[in-house]
Amino acid sequence: MSVTPIIFAKHRQGSVPAQNHYMPTDAVVVLDFSGFETTPFLSQILALNLNKLMAPGLGFQGKLDSGENFAVYYFSETAYRFVVSESAAAELATLIDSHADEFDIELVRRHDLVAATISGELAFERLVSDFTLTPGLRISDKNACYGKQSGEVFITTLLVDEQQQYQLIAQAAVLEKWQTTLTDAGFKLVS
View 1 (cartoon, helix red, strand yellow):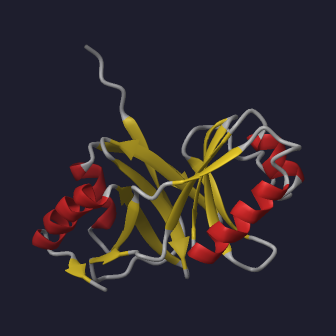
View 2 (view 1 turned 90 degrees about the horizontal axis):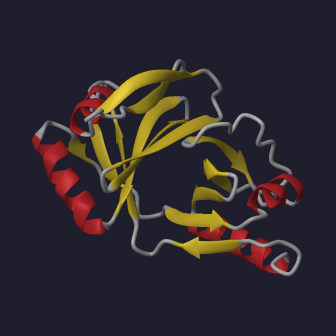
């Protein structure tokens, strides 16, 4: 039986904090965006350049008209995932609702998912080891991000304030187990 590796990425630039931290991220909302016209909607209404999103997992960070930050991940031509703040989630929902008659699209808020952020010198190696990931991509665009599903956890890499960080997105019970595993391994719990 052949095993297909889960290729993962990290940024070429950005600093890596010396301290290893695990931080629950209560302010993050996960929105799954799907439908036959998701790509045209994102291109035409949000004016997003999706040319670089050629493979599942690739994404980028941007700002909505209000100035709210977002990260969007490409799954397929008909499915994307947004990771946003509460106010950005409300703004996206309003925008999508206002165009629901024009586009075959649906935005689903994932109330079942929560997020945590890890960072530090050991973060990347720990993710590769614990989630059986294969390091293979180096991201050079500061606004680019990358996410992959490994088991029950969606793992992302992104730059925040010029620092490399990784988000773990999963159901609360799953993240509680990972919090214990990572804090036992020396990651400091930051609230």
